[in-house]
Length: 427
Image (tube, rainbow, N blue to C red; front, side):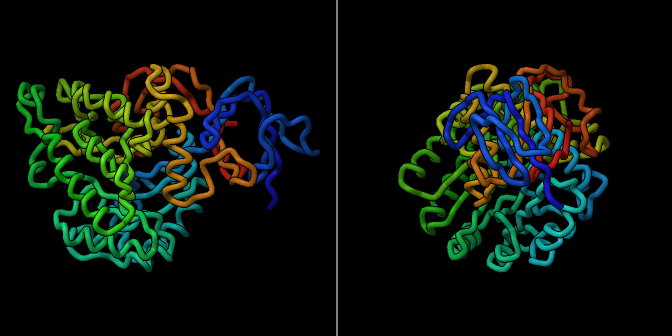
């Protein structure tokens, strides 16, 4: 079935590849046909007057947990798809922490087959487990799963303590040019900790996770990436201490990349004050100095990617004493608005910010999306950049509503989301 052509005119186009923001129009069916100054549309095209609204490529969220299969009460392909479309996320990479765990090619295949039917068109790509059962011991069949369509390999929230196992995986992954994502956190130092180790944790009487836990593991991971020539994504950095190590590795030509969770760019440990379990994240929200440093690192391209770290938890797992409450926050619907905080404050250029959620993930995952260029898939979002709203987490489309942005004022609303030229949200 042919996709009807659409012309959006009088728009402000954010082009992350050309690094520019310019007024113009965009014409597309399932692919982008033309961008820039367009005088006429083909017969029968839908014409939308954007009236100055911004257009960007659909967001690519590289770190999303979905409960299906096994924990459908937290999130399903369907509810994740709805939340993603509303947030302007057109492609998401799903973590392997399902039940069963995505650790063989039949499960990779299951996600690729089931995802599109259930998600309302949102592209769901599987990240496969790096070790069997995510237990950090036995490497999975990276080659077979890469062939089946896994876009990256990760151990999820469980860092691999054994350097030998991670070395082997990075080494083996080079044959397939596969991307290995690893959460740098020394499990021995972090054990039992529930928030950033510092004065506030001491005052609240809560056990802390020192920033050194991240630095120590990141230094090891970068050394292993250098040793093997493997492609490593340091997943969800939280600490300023880690950044110089990443910078040195990149300067030496190590194939190292990094992501940051949007919550760590906007919030800090003070959001935990009053034992707010919605702000209990892994890695934990750290100091204001850490938050500022992470913003600078996004601004100068040292951190490549911004993710939502979407991790749905039921109310009964969050409404517990702080030490017992589950880690994690939902984020698909607030990724864009959260990130735009840095644009509104003048901390990060708009194109840089959008690039970290579109073009950079697309390049790392070798996807044709993430660009406003001719022949790219027409995964496009229309944004009212300045529209203010107070987040009411009860109104989120996710099955869970554990957002640390609850009751916070944000700016930036997705008006319409297109995937392959079809409207999946708004309109």
